[in-house]
Structure formats: C-alpha cells, structure tokens
Image (cartoon, rainbow, N blue to C red):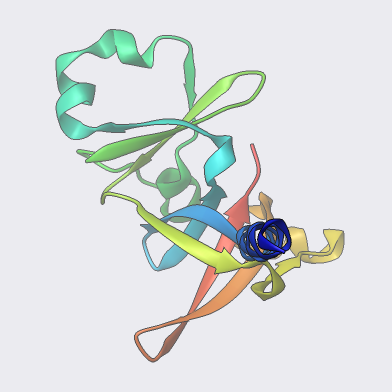
Length: 142
C-alpha cells in the first residue's frame, strides 16, 4: 500500500511539472519576449560583457531592439545566449525574469500571423495574469 501512495505522489508531481513551462522573459521596449529555459545556453551580465570579450566569441548578435525601433541599446545590462546550431546572443537592457507559464496559456501562432507579430520570429504567444494585469509574451524559438 505504501508504494501505491508514493507512486501516486510521483505521478501527481510529474503531471504538475508537465503542466508548466519555464520561460526567461525580458522586455524590448513595450514588447515582452520569452524563451524556453531549455533553449538558454547562458545569461551574461554587464560586468562579464565589459570585462571578458572572449565570452562573445562565436556568438551571433540578434539585436531585437534595433529590429523593432531602428536603434541598438547603447549599454546592454545583460545578454541572453541561445542554444542551437549557432549560438545567438540577444542584448537586453534589464535582467530577465524566470516565469513558469501554464502550458494551457500558450498558443501557436499560425504562419499567416507570424509575419504580423513583432519581428515575425515568434512561434508562440502566451497571455498570463501578473499583478492584476494581462501580459502578452511572444515566445521565440532558436
């Protein structure tokens, strides 16, 4: 009987884990972007960026701020480095936040809508409630 109770608890825990996805969320202007944690290679803070340029070796810069507003961030405070065939770094002006988002709040953007969302590079969108307001997060895939 004890093993059944333990097994049920593990199953319930597994269901809860699968019910959410962890996103690294950051803003570029008024637009919130999220990247699944499993796609993140590392996050570099301003101190590391200024002190050790070798950390940037082999990283292609994906300047979302420039693509949205036509100008780059003068002094980024952090850079999110994505995993993939090639490393891509996104300079951001604030430290990103880790948010667990219920999977049922995430929707796939249809191909025809992907060209209408910011940058045309988000594959999914999530709308979540934070502090009595709705936050729309465009989810990027590397």
